[in-house]
Length: 340
Ligand code: FES
Ligand SMILES: [Fe+2]
Image 1 (cartoon, rainbow, N blue to C red):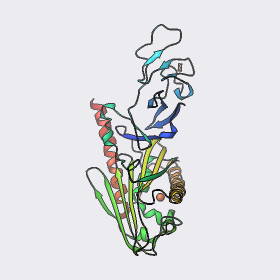
Image 2: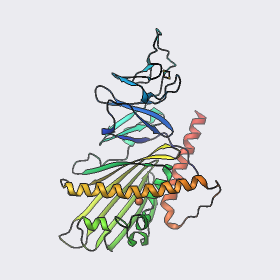
Image 3: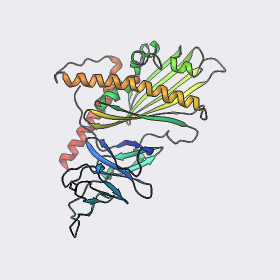
Image 4: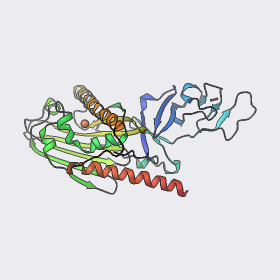
């Protein structure tokens, strides 16, 4: 599998709200080190994280009011990235500046626009379940030592659940049921409808009936968001129906390291802490299995020659369509950069 260049003209889930405060926090996004903090009024800010003087990481400096003082020679930058002070000098040179990045905080996530700020329209953020009335969610983060594309393709072909997650959400019905793949204007959608099947172990734990109708819709919203809309409907009265959306925010840090901010949002059992706990623990367990598999895949890709052979099967249609969209966006962005 080839390395696909970053698509920077997009919103990326940078951090959960509780991760950013009055301490400097560094996160890499699309190959760019970025330093995050909250201003004194509580709003989040993000600046390019490398001091332009001698490339010291700004996250190792000090937050003074709403400014960052570099920890090496004390050059200070404001929230807009402009230099506010050079120790021992009367004036701050205009050229001594770092980029500041547009942010949008909503539903407990801080989103960062990594490309040309002119395109930073928050309406383009697809996620809409976190913080939605009558829904509740659990969330977490995993770090993948691998390229983002591996995770996207994992999420767009859920047949792997039968083999990688047999103790929780996978059983043979998942692998044996064909997928309908649709390439739509704004997303790639893979739909799997499983009628009258035995529930996988995690759903059985939630008390569904001995047979269920299970729906799985995996949607890839380019460049790096996957939504899994799922239902598990009991086929007998008196048993619950599980309706949930798994939000997978795939944030490439570098070419071979990816931040995976995930959430499971549901519209049932809103006030039941045991249900929240089961989703929190179960999801974290499942995603650890994915990360371990993808880490092994990346390590293998690193050691194979570049011309290694990759063979695909019909079930890969959605993953391959997602790959094609990312490649097109990356190529378009590079072409625009050359022309402008
Ligand atoms: S490296 Fe930052 S002030 Fe010198
Ligand atoms: Fe998985």
